[in-house]
Image (cartoon, rainbow, N blue to C red; front, top):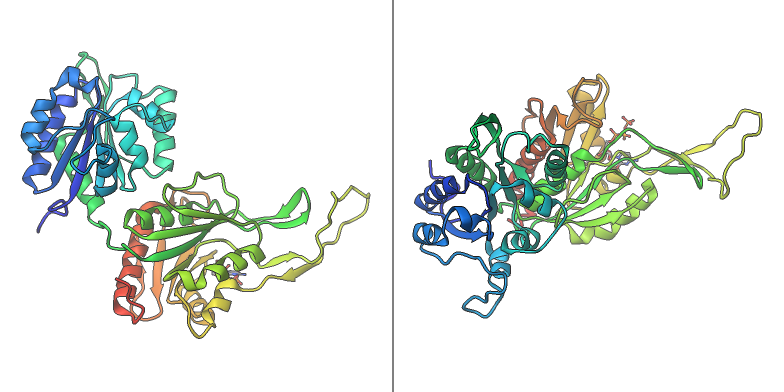
Amino acid sequence: MTSSVVGCRIAVAVCGGIAAYKVASLVSQLVRLDAQVDVLMTEEAKRFVSALTFGALTHRAVHEDPWQLDNQGEIAHIALARSIDLLVVAPATAHTLARLAHGLADDVVTLIALATPAPVLLAPAMDAGMYGHPAVTENVTTLQQRGYHVVGPRSGRLASGLTGLGRLAEPDEIVAAVEALLHWRRDLAGVRIAVTAGGTQEPIDPVRFIGNRSSGKMGYAIAQAAVERGANVTLVSAPTSLPAPPRVTQVAIQTALELREALHGLLDQVDVIIQAAAVADYRVADPETTKIKRSGEALVLELVENPDIIAGIGALPQHPLLVGFAAETGAHLDEARAKLRRKGLDLIVFNDVSKQGSGFGSDMNEVTLVPARGEPEVLPLLPKLDVAHRLLDRVRDMLQASARSVL
Ligand code: CTP
């Protein structure tokens, strides 16, 4: 099978750690797989390996100077940022992880990481003890939440002679991670997708609302995965504690009615709507405009039904491809199928939220993809980002097969 790396443009950012010498082998492997590789180096990296090493391996000039113009007179690393399919940072040192987490832009490596719309793969390496430090752990978590991918580090003997977690992943393992990321390379380029996420909040008074347990993680993972595959993504989000994935257009909503308005505004601008938001079926008929005070008596709230947003869109004579979710407790596939038909959806993602370790709040999900035509696909328990990619595989296939084809 041909490697997904063939013909791709990959930037490898080398930072100042002893593992920098291993990156020469990584770069050499990528070049042999027929990728076009550009290397960027921090000043500290050059203390370990020379730019000449990478220049000789790639047959291309190494980026070292943020003030360098390319042949077209453009700032070289910015032009590169826009043209690459993937950025690999290896070794990602504790210092560079901190700079990336804080959005610093003080050398070619941090500049390209900020400027590129391509996915970023970090291969951390540092001495034992450092990787376990809460500062480093938090920086890695922050970067992962922003959509960066991480390979390694591994445990083993470190350059200092200590043994511990901090060895750079082997070049083979990094190449495998690169291949997995490039597998989907831009197969949704040009597709416009609206993703909704989070649980709507229906006000009771100015300080209280009716909400639900949705964390928004599934919708955010879909938005991130779609952006990585080249889609143009609008994320319509109810309040969540999640950072916006990079490069998505975010629209903040709070209530079901606001969500409906936002989606209707996007109807003729998108090819696909993925309704992952947990929409409140009821809202308070007449929310108070001032805070409700304790009265010593029972409080009765009148609730009225919210419109079924996705069903309303599904009933329109023309609409984007529609994907809905059916988060059920102990329900069956047949009920998900009935929901799909009732709402006029093209696909429904069915999951049993009563299962441990899956669904609300979790980083994992175990779902079945139920298309309007064709067989359901039962997926194993997977990280939500992987579920997102499997769902987008189906969306891509459906777009290709339909008259709506934009691919
Ligand atoms: N949905 C919607 N508008 C609503 C309620 C739900 O667009 N007012 C969408 C959800 O975002 C989801 C799908 O419809 O994509 C199924 O949601 P679910 O809550 O499972 O369906 P309900 O129609 O509310 O059915 P139930 O009676 O099972 O709650």
